[in-house]
Length: 101
Image 1: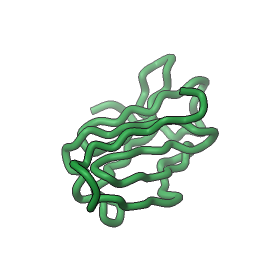
Image 2: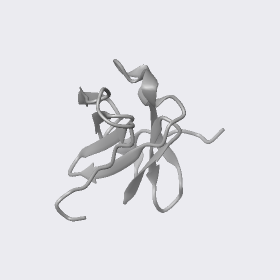
Image 3: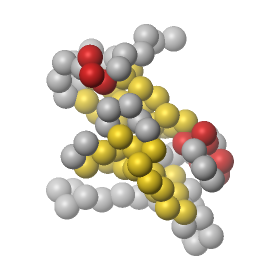
């Protein structure tokens, strides 16, 4: 398993990756995992178990969407800032866009 590092140790650009119900923050230069957050560990996040996760970086926030849920996580350590639940609408596929997309 890869060694995890705090984002305060990062040396440059980062990328957020959504995969199978989780969000990872990686250091671009090295591929090091700075943090990983299982969305199923968050309130009402259980529908995200094993599901695709869309992610975007917005300033110092990672926004993740999965199965009708949208989560805002801190870039620093992946702590939950807020979340909304739209689970009862549609088939569950959830996408994100920012003004730069």
